[in-house]
Image 1 (tube, one colour):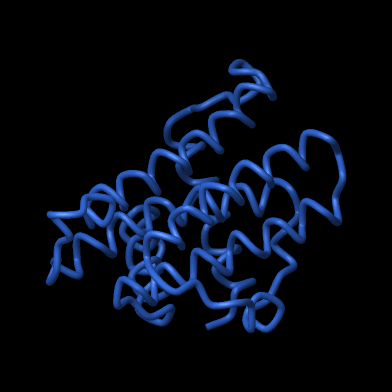
Image 2: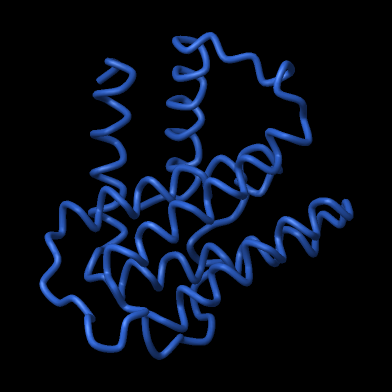
Length: 172
C-alpha cells in the first residue's frame, strides 16, 4: 500500500464532507480547528483502547470482532491523516516509518500514541516543522504497530478505507 495514496484518498473524502456539510472552518477559528483535530484523535484512540479493555487487569478482551476493531481504528486514522494533510506531513512513506523499536505490548503502544499526539501538537504550535514531522512519523509508526497488535493488516485498512470513501463520496 502506498501511504501517499492513503493521504490523497482521505483528502478527497474530507473535501467531500466539507462540501456537503457546508462547514466553514474559518467561522470556527483556526486555533479551535487545530485543537479539535488533536482532541478528536485522542478521543478516537481512547475509544479503540476502551473497546479492547486492555487497560483493565481482569477484563482483557480476546476475540473482538475484527469489523468493530477496524471501524474504530479507521475512525482514529481519519484524524491522523487529516493532521498529516493539514501540516504537510503527507510526504512520509512506509519505508520512512518502519524499522522503529517494537513496542512489546498493546498497552505500551497506546501509551506511546498518546505521548506522540501531544508531542506533535506541541511542536506544531512552536512552528518547528522538521521536529514536528519526525514526531508525526513516530506517531504514525506506533499507529501501524497498534494495527498489528490488533490483528489488522495495513492492506485491510487500506481496502476498508477505500470502501468507506467510495460509499461516502459515491465516487467509485
